[in-house]
Structures are given as C-alpha cells and as structure tokens.
Length: 480
Image (cartoon, rainbow, N blue to C red; front, top):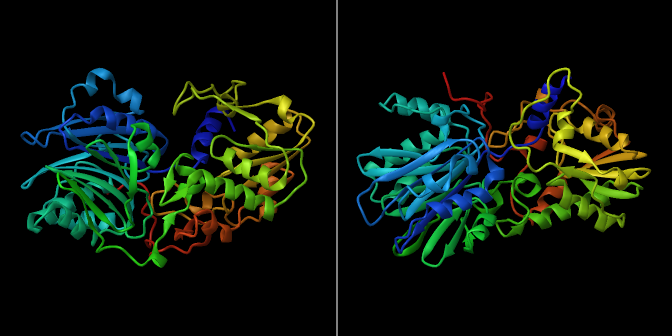
C-alpha cells in the first residue's frame, strides 16, 4: 500500500458520527451568534466537513442572517463575519456526511421561507425512508436544493405547519412520517424547538444561562459557554422554548423497553466530559475497559490506549487488572482533516505523522493496547507494528466494542459488511491480519451495562435493529 492510500485508509478506518447541533434563544434579546460559535467548537469532533450558523431577531422583522461553509468552525468563522450575525435566536451545525455529497449546498443549518414565515433547521442522524419521502414531496411540487435528508424533514415540517395550529404541532405531525435517527433543532419566528426520534438514537439536551435557553447535542457544549444543564430531551419528545419557558409534548414517546440509543455515543462519538441520558461517557469507557480485563485477561507489563477514545478504556483495564497504565502514543494535535500527503515513493508514513510511539514506554515490555474499534482493519496492523518496532516484546490488542458485522443505517458511517474486517472472519484470523499476539473484543452482553442499563441499538454487532432496516443500502447520496 502506498503512502497516499495509507493516509486515506487512516482517515477512513475510524468511525464517524454524522453531525452536531446547537440552538440558543436569549429571551432578553442579546445576540447569540458568538455563543453558538463556541458551542459548535465544543462539538467539532462530531463533524469536520462543514458548519454553519443562522440567527434571527424575535423582537424585529423576521430577517435571517446565515453563514455556512466547508471546513472547521475556526476556518469558516472569524470575529469579523461573526459580528455581522445579529439575532437573539439561532441554530448551529457541524457536519460529517453519511448521506448527501460533501459540498457547500449541503451544509447546514437549512433556512426555508414559506407561507408561515421562516424556518431554520439543523439535523443530526439519518432517515431510512428519506428516498420515498423525497419522491412523495417532489410529486406534489417540492423543489430540492440539496441532496441531504435534512431538507426532507424541513419540507415536511413546513408543509405540516400550514394546517397545524403551532410550529411544535407541525414538528410532531412530521415526526409521524419519519423513520430513522434524528435529533432536531428548529427555530420558527419566535420559538426554539428540539426533537428526538422515538428510539432516542441521537443525543439532545437542554441548558440555561441567565435568561437564555440552549439545545445541544452534548452537555460539553453547555459547559463551554458557561450554561447549566437542565435535562435531556426524552426519546420521542418535542420541546418548545418561547418567552413563557419550556413546553413538552411526549405523545411520540415509546415505552422505555423500546428505546435504542446508539451505543457508540458511549464508546466513541461523544466527548468523555459529556453525559448522555444521565450516564457519564467517561464512566462508560472506564467500565468497558474493566469488562475487557475481566473477560479477556492477559499477562503484561503495561496497558496503553490509542488516543483519544481508547485512553479511558485503557485506564479501566489497568484499574481492574492491576497492570500499570502508561502512555505509549503521542498524537500530533495539529494534523487536521487534511495535510500535504506524502508522495507515492516517499518514506513518510501517514500513520506516523498523526501518531508516534514513545519508545521508552514500551521497549522490552509486554503491551496491552486498547482501541475503541476495528472497522476495516487498515491501520491496526500499522499501529501494532509501530509498537513492535519500538521494542515491545508482545502486543495484545483489546477492543472496547464488539466486532462490527453489519451495516448501520442510523447515522454512523459503518461501511458495507464486505468491507468490515470482522465479517466472515474469526477473531484468530483478524488477529493474524493485524499481527498482534492476541486479540479480544468487548462482549455484546456488556454493552447495556456500560450504558447504565438504558435501551441501546446493537444492530451493527448482531443485526438486531430496533426497526425494520431498508431492503437496500440507502446510505450514501440521495441523488437519482
């Protein structure tokens, strides 16, 4: 494999979340754009392809200021263009695409002008019936400007609003037609609305700072702007924030036994300083490491994590096993989504550009290496070899999730099963491919325990999806 291919595989082999959403309504009339900016900065790990902010003034005429573009939050926004975004209610978004092209027109938030006014919308998740809904809307006159399922949601809400008494009623009615995963932040002229799909795949929480309310994908975004956590939006709940406070509609909520959160929020996606439905992400990763030590013990001299999400699980493994925890990898924090890739005949390894080994930490030692997942397996063998090149006498790999065997249709960018290293291979065969001395995965039975007993989706591990999956692979671009 040449270096350019290796770089591509290094980027592709990790899991990717689809998006992060953030909304804010300052009832005193203060501008919210800068706070949304910092909130998105805290959610940058959820999407690095594009971002955007839209704001409006609830005290004046309904004029929307919108700025969005390709790139990271600090690449798209600066003090000058932020100062031009005036309004006390607004919506922000960071995006990684699992459906729809990575192009400027697909960046969010979406702003729709229709007969009842203006709608601003940001969406995290993936619909499994977007194609049929898109066709239905197109045949009744809808003209689509993007290739993303979020525009389908926006049109549905706008269409329902024509006959509904309120915007929140329109959102609830639209939800009755949606199938899949979604956390929504929507602004109507004088209301901020948040909604989660009935299974609760994606996180959404409510915060408050002074006389302003916030909706965000993760609690860490509330901390960043100095807001206090109020509560999580319930799976299936629609919350409406206006001058009178918070109103709730739970008519779409399912029995607790049917809830199916994406367990990878706990394992990988969410920042460790976030809480998801009352469960600490950091604690979940510590528990995953402890369970690995219980179920896949091995004699060794040091336990190390692959940054960043492998670190807490490695600490848990060390706590449970009594084997010392160490730092074996130095991650280059300044390598972003892209950099000048090594030429085909160059000696530089793209993995080594992003990650390097501390020889003193592993030389002459038996090493347990904890990582959050193996997807295609295109980098695990490189990382194992790097440890051995640095003098590790043995490398035992432990993974804080079960093997990926099936596709995800709900917003996690897991490739088709024929690209998954674990599909149709035994653990021994995978171990041989990555060149480790042993390999162990987290047991599927442990997943509910690390999620605090809450209902979770395990479809990518055991094909037990919480709803009937599509007959064909709908992941990708909604283009005909």
